[in-house]
Length: 172
Ligand SMILES: Cc1cc2nc3c(=O)[nH]c(=O)nc-3n(C[C@H](O)[C@H](O)[C@H](O)COP(=O)(O)O)c2cc1C
Image (cartoon, rainbow, N blue to C red; front, side, top):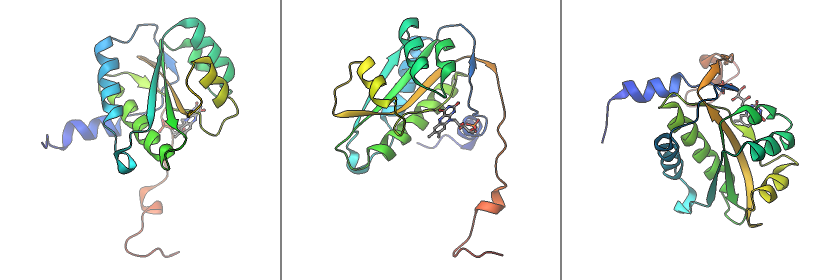
């Protein structure tokens, strides 16, 4: 089913990491849609080696924010998703990264901004897993605080022609 390029491209091209949120809660319908988008992501051998945590309790958001050194703003988000990958799945990192992007875009389709906060390579990954009572066979891949944007910062991007090559790479 091809819907034409306009809506999809608009969602993709207008996404920015949002770190300041309005207090308004996110509607359940939007949360469910975003989770559906995440779980439809491609995975190696279709293993779907993941768990998606949904955290809305203020106290838990504050505890996650205290742990995540570059995610202090999680404490002011109305919601934070946590994507966990099954350690014994060979491609869990790629799979859960794909799911994280789909979660981001599924939220943004409704105007809900979010910001990927690192998980997998961080010392606090285990502490977040324990905080959320997630079994040891899983590891945190990403945290995704989300909310209606209060402030949008546009990040500079590299020039496309500088990073694309055709056929074979050459220095010229
Ligand atoms: C793997 C990964 C980890 C990230 N970790 C953090 C983080 O810990 N804290 C944060 O504020 N932003 C984090 N970001 C968001 C990036 O800073 C952001 O995507 C980048 O600056 C480009 O901005 P844009 O998303 O608006 O295009 C992370 C993004 C990725 C993909």
